[in-house]
Image (cartoon, rainbow, N blue to C red; front, side, top):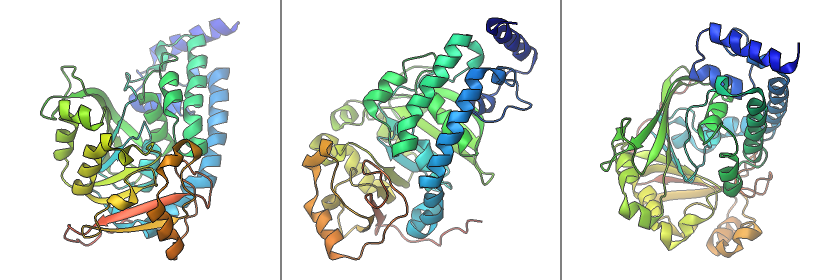
Length: 365
């Protein structure tokens, strides 16, 4: 039997089984075992086996190099943020739920915002043999930068997310959630109306996706991803994203590899919003400038080392941050993060608001 016949037989077998759920789709895209899945027949293809093998290797390397150390360190280094169940707001994120969930596994809600398109919930059963192989290869290319260097390259990602029928950020979000051990319950495309209300029946200027999932501790959690321009001029024209964020109450903030955008006047609105609405802010040096944390409102400290920006962003060197590292005994971190992703070269900044009445931290079992 030739390859095309085998692939058609796989499709026929899948059609006789139950329709694959979003969690089935996520586990398939993540290259995870398919025993008992409606997609088990498709997983017999050489393309899937190669996909699974390469992702297993890339994930094992990232676990050993970065993510295991983050999980062990975060409860001690970022206790208020890591233990908090408050929503996490991650701006300039791309589809990086991986770092958000690794650092902050207890958040009730994750809100990611970036310019990359949302796309539609992926369905691998609608891909031909050639389309499936090409789509899985392209997905691995998209994931490679984040797993190897801890950040996505925006220009490359824009191209990659349109290259095959697995479009937008949703396939990447699926992979990261599945590989983190989460169980996806439901997925839907959503939009924000002018008042920041989440709607499902009308397209607007702010498209997004809502994923409800069961986390590794058994709790139900929600992930929102919005394709939103959060430059100050865009937020003035369409404040729906900030109005949505207002409904979250007090949040924890996270950002990294943010192209130093909040160092520019054009992004002062989102910078000021974070400083006035967050309980904690965790970031690398590409986020809010060190000088812009009001010391009467924030306790701010740093970890790791400050080698300065990579050459592409050399104009955003922060002399006052360099002075802090030279004048203080700064604790190291056992992982790399951000543009300076190599171990012992990364900068991590952590701020806790002084304007919040401290509550006893919940016990995390």
